[in-house]
Image (tube, rainbow, N blue to C red):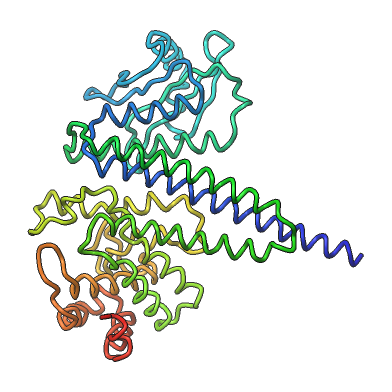
Length: 418
């Protein structure tokens, strides 16, 4: 019985390690999606380039004999915008799917749908291209392989890639960013290919960790924890690398916000969640052109509206990661205000997480006191004035009081200003 108890404990620890492995595996897939965003937002590209690159990846992964994208046109109909292989066969399969209702059914699912092709031998893969607000189109591929040969990772990959492509197409459409492909495109493709190779090697290393002796479980768990924190830190650095004026901004906001969280009664674990959210609270800015982020003048209305999309974009990038804390929600809410005057949702009062309230105060103090492309830093005194004027209306009173107390601490200010 004693040995049976030890065995059960080891099996439980091994299951826990496998679960952490799956968590890190999913984080790495999200980093892959960030690379896709970096590829298209950091270069001047067109809709055709995005469709071509995405089609190449999905067609290669699923070994499709023919594949194409049907995009919503001006008349709200789906037209074949880009394809490889036999376009006539794609159109024939689409007509069948429209008549039997499978096409409309797949649009509503926003998940991979596998069906028998009209020839009875091939498999049709359908997947909607959707963002959080609209459907951009539909992917249709014809595979020669049996659907049973597909792994869950294949289907998860196609969802990540197609929804990422849909987000990019929406940005291009909304903000008229269609331009010719330049020399930076090849460099970004090389960087993306290199990153994919590194991620593949890293996944293989993680799989080997699962097979280690049970005596090494504790050490493996610690390494996985460090890896997650490292990936989160890398996400934050992606944004700061594109905007030198905000270098260190997310780390300072994370430090102040987590300290405030502890001061207003949040647990140590909850404060750690606030710190993690602070490290990536501006990750959505990766979808905003660098020339807007670094513009040495006041933004116009369209540019400011584009910047205001970053909390929602950050939420979309982080929502699939199963953090122990509501990190994605805090990122989406860090520009909300208690009186409902914030964005993107106009939330008010108790609708806003306490962690997001801490982020909001820390962010405004950091933003006002630090330098920006269009103005020098206004100083900590101006930040204090802003907090006092809007205490209880825009900002949580308890958080503001804690922040004012923190600012009066000489040791804190010395660390903050260093």
